[in-house]
Every structure is written in structure tokens, then in C-alpha cells.
Length: 305
Ligand SMILES: Nc1ncnc2c1ncn2[C@@H]1O[C@H](COP(=O)(O)OP(=O)(O)O)[C@@H](O)[C@H]1O
Ligand SMILES: [Mg+2]
Image (cartoon, rainbow, N blue to C red; front, side, top):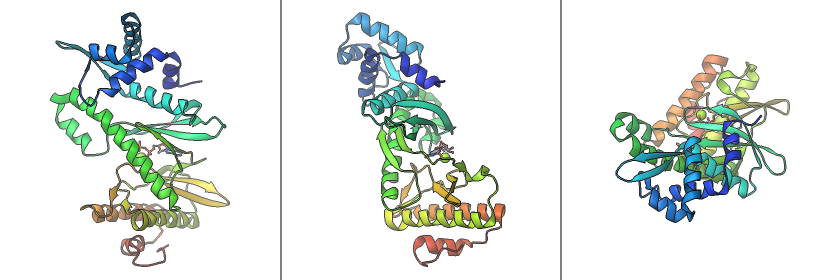
């Protein structure tokens, strides 16, 4: 049973994608792209353009403004359609499946590749700090912010994909980066994974193993890739069964900061504090913050667990 996004994609025709692309291309210049610009750049005759715009409006993939000039902007589902279409055209995915995770900041889908492999498609939404705050406090500029949020979501997609590339290449325990288009990041599915905060209770041995794996990944990120996650918690760690033991993966990287940035060391300390505190309070794993920090900074060689 296809989900809402898959059903929308089935309803779209080539003309619709031409119109969506014509709008998208001009979002850097206009709040609402004037109808005349959409017409010229989509190269569609007026009757086909109107039919397409009506369909796109009904599906809520574009939004129209009636100012002195009629204009159009993209919605997030409109951006989703463009990204999924591009990933399909490139042969990265063949079929979009169900939503497997929906945070405030993304919608996460399962998808099938042409060879039948199950992968994850993460579609970024607004959110992830500075922008979030700006929007909340400036309601008068809601439309300006809508456009900017689309550009922001694309930036988050790019950042997350590039972070995963750097980390995965260095053997950190993160999902495999597969592809990126606009705000969409295609990554390996961590099979059978559950977030650490709600995983069925681990044995103490498994908990120690999971913490050691998370700290090792934080260490590789900091020492070798030169980045700090910045939002590490039991919500951004996935745990799966793995050859008789457990495997922990750190996900959700778009807000990373470079190790040389001003707040990096504060963020590193906070990340390590949150995760060691979780393992201490839920599983009684004793790993002191100081020792864990020394390990991830490379000041000691052995993990504290
Ligand atoms: N690679 C993955 N494998 C399996 N599940 C994933 C993967 N990436 C994300 N998820 C699921 O999607 C949820 C949200 O992903 P996350 O990257 O944390 O995005 P958000 O920014 O919305 O928090 C996760 O809690 C998890 O359930
Ligand atoms: Mg998350």
C-alpha cells in the first residue's frame, strides 16, 4: 500500500515536473516566482501550463500568491517530488515505501533500489537551530521564511551526506551514504534497528559494548574527520542485533560543527555528557565524563568501558 507521497508521485506527469523545476530554479530570486517566468521557463503552452498548475495546487505541491503579480512557490511536498523523481531517474531508488520515522526535522522513508536492496530516504524539513528560532520570532515574514526554509533544508541534506561520507570512509559506525539530491539523503538501512531510548533492555555487557561503539564513533569524528555531532543523545543512536552481540550506530548528522569552530569543544563535552549519563542512569554503566572525554579527544587510547 503506497503512502501519500508515493500516490502523489504516481499522479504527476512530465509537464508537472517541468513546472516544478521552473519554480525551483527561480526561488533564489523570487519569493513567489511570477507566472510569466514559470511560463517562459517551463516552455509549456498556456493551456498545458494551466492544467499542470491546477493539478500541482490541488496536490499542494505549489502555493500561489495573489499579489499585484500572480506567482508560485514550492511546498515541501513539491520539493520531495523533485528529489524523488531525480533519484529515481538516476537509478538510485526504484520504489518509495513506508515512512519509518518522522521527527520534527525530517520524514524518513524506506525505499527499494533497482537491485532490490532496502535503503532509507531521509527528507529534511525545516529545523535544526538557528533558522528555527528565526522563523518563530518573525511571523511577519512567514513567506520569506518559507522560501528560505526550502533552501535551508537542501543545505542540511548536503551537510548530512558529506558528513556521512567523511565518517563512513573512516570506519565510523554510521549508516552508509548512498546518494544525495536536494534535501534528500539516501543511506543504508540499519536493519532491525531501534533507537537507544526505546530499545528492549540490553544486558549490562551489551550496554557497555554499545557505549564503547558510540564513543569510538565520536572519537573518529573528532580526531579524524574533524567534526562534532552536536545533537548526540539516546534518540540519535540506533541499536541492532549483530553477530551475537549488539551494534550501535550514530545517526542524524546535519548540524555537525567543525572541531575548530568556537563552540565545538562545548558541544563535544555536551554530547559525551548526555550519552554517558544515559548509560549510567539506565544501565548502571560507570564511565566518567572526564575519562570518556579524554578518550574521544585522543588523550588516552583505551575506551573507559
Ligand atoms: N539509516 C537508518 N536506518 C534505520 N532507521 C533510520 C535510519 N535513519 C533514520 N532512521 C529512522 O528515522 C528516525 C529519524 O531519523 P533522524 O536521522 O534522527 O532524523 P531527525 O532529524 O528527524 O531526528 C530515526 O529515529 C530512525 O527511526
Ligand atoms: Mg534524530
